Length: 380
Image (tube, rainbow, N blue to C red; front, side, top):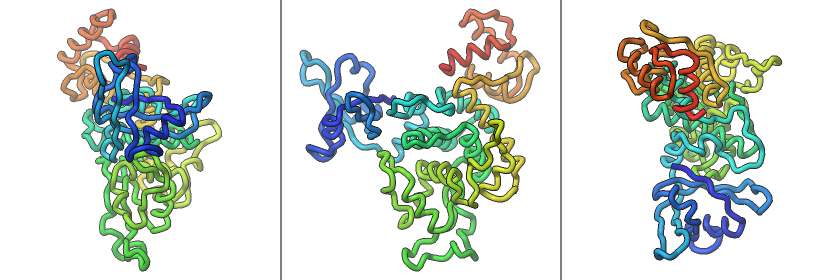
């Protein structure tokens, strides 16, 4: 579970280790908060000067909870730094961190994901035949977390941009959503030769193949480490770090936004009517190769995103004999074997769901059922 806590500057400095012992002092919290906090939970500590957030924040994992005695009010939390694996775990949670990963006074952007469960379930139904493995789920969650990090430094990521980045990753990794190395490691190309200064070779790595030393330098300047410190991860001396999902997600989003790959950037394909040119956006990575195919993926990711931010999407009315991705989503929500075919077992599960929520138990999935799923299952 994830929590967010607001600290005054002096307390913030002590807890994160700027003053006092290495690793920081423990944090004292009141009894009203205690029942919600457990060991191994993760927490974002946000500095607040009494009037506004300063923009400084760090993430920690709760290592130990200590209550000095039964008469004491509150407990002491001993915390430790997160590693990359912890951050990816956080990114995959349907938690406040992924819903509103920010310590700011401004309003959430239009792409502020409210339900990671809705996002992942809809994506699983439309693009993964009903099943996301751990790497795929972590990639999607990681992209949401990176979107939150970007917002924290003043970068707003529109839903269409996020959708196109995910569609590109889906295509470039052959649907695995795992960071990969370039086939052949740049053999026969200039960037496939060891750099005379560093001895490293800057062939393609990541969710989207990052090539050339200058792009690894850009990533070193712009990317954040798991403690949300920017510009401290050296990809020039350690280019294989781009195979770490947390870093690969940042390179994909920041690189496509800034035009690292071909000079074309995500914003170049925003249209005046507010829509997005998903077909020509392929030029951000590789001309028009597979442009229409990837555009189709992007529309599916965008639809899932609209659902996850609470904008609602159009789904079919379902009954016995129906087939397709809407049936798959329904089966995933109801915890059924997911074959995408609305049969007798699905009908009985729908009737049980309808009875549970006071709906007419006719086994037909109409708008009232979808609205109830969005509200009661996804929390939208």
